[in-house]
Length: 301
Image (cartoon, rainbow, N blue to C red; front, side):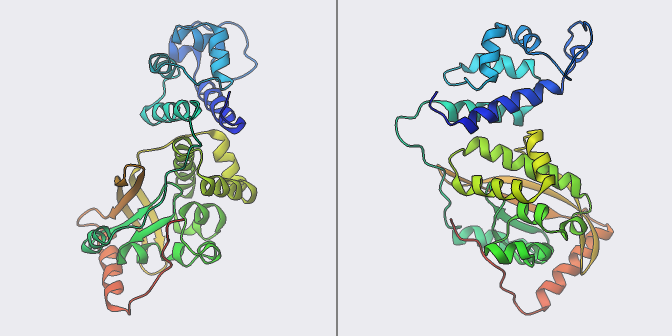
């Protein structure tokens, strides 16, 4: 095999954690005797996927290079993977294929002025752009005000740029800012896991994961769960030091820059005629009336 051992580990851990989440009853298989480990056995997954136990065992050990999409799809169905997990599996398979040349990671690029103009035009929504490593690379005034605890965090000062994953797992203040901190932690680790599948050669990402794994027991636990998230939308509850509790809806959209670079545009807004809308309007007015503040701006790395 020509892909690195840590990639084989990702494949092994992903299959093992997905198996552990399923029971024979869930997939229509008979239950026989006491089980030493939770979830499905390898041979049961093999039966469901229509392949031999030996072949599936090799696949779970990381020998995924050259496996056809049809077979991967059968395994995905057997493990009942959701769309994000299926995408991640195919990303792992693509990364495992022998490369004719040294693979390069997707390069970060400068955010063009037109994107900043777009962000600045959204005066009643907090809008920002981040990369797959969860670096905030651009944002409008309301996004900077809303995420002031992130920008003002020692984790931002130490590295010179705001990174949501570092803030969530390394700054104790994140537990106050994110009212549902556990949900934020799960989602952030899952987003990083999906990015690791897409961009296995991103050295900065590997260094970030190493840093978080070393310094945060919570991150180590979430990383070991091997959850994957690509789509990012829903409701988020925050506590802001200036305006108090906020319940905001958010939607993330792909923002392609080049054929190798895709950023994520995230927009936070409040439901009309709610207390959260009133408080978000107050924060917007406070932002508009105070002197312009310059927050750390991330540069392509």
